Length: 115
Length: 111
View 1 (tube, rainbow over the protein chains, first blue to last red):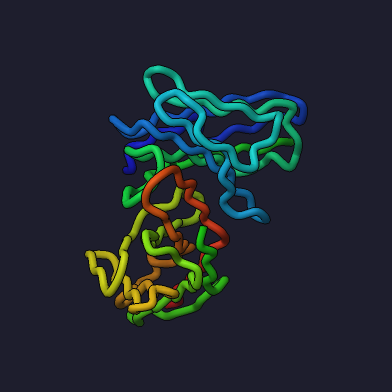
View 2 (cartoon, rainbow over the protein chains, first blue to last red):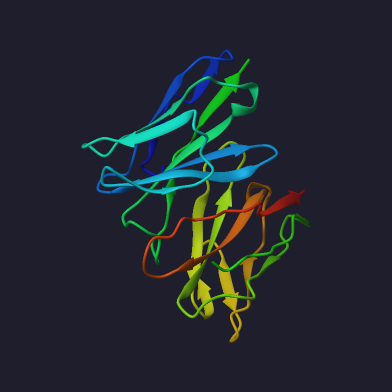
């Protein structure tokens, strides 16, 4: 158990819909990272938050957005869903803003299926 | 950021030692080398990290030659449960860094 909690574990929805994925980082971790993993793309970095502020953006679509709340949990919002958005979405947390010698702790992921 | 290159896949048998080599020719002086393991439908898990020479823990060993242009993750006496994808990352110290995982090496352990 990494200490990172993601909900829901599985989600099935239709194209055009909007979903919200939630992540609770390890106790005390200030950094939250979101990754998308699909069969053909590998593990892709989406966005990072540190103590409530956006710190880095990766290949995140404009239809996707995220935020980190004062209690440090984070939500990833995916809207106007397309079939290609079907993937595993992972949240990870770390104690520091950037990984120097620290490690990244991943949740078990949220599997999104868009029909 | 240093680019890493590792084999796409490897096959082994139970009880054998497995060595996965990662090439990182343009590694910087302050870069550390980190390996993660990912089982199907699970998030990656930190295995080991090192800067130079050899690091060993209860899971694996990491060998880093003097020039640090490559590193080798060694898994002793693998079992079926070691079937996973293994990622090599090079992490600079200082400032912000976003872990980039690439495709990793898919290790399949056969009975």
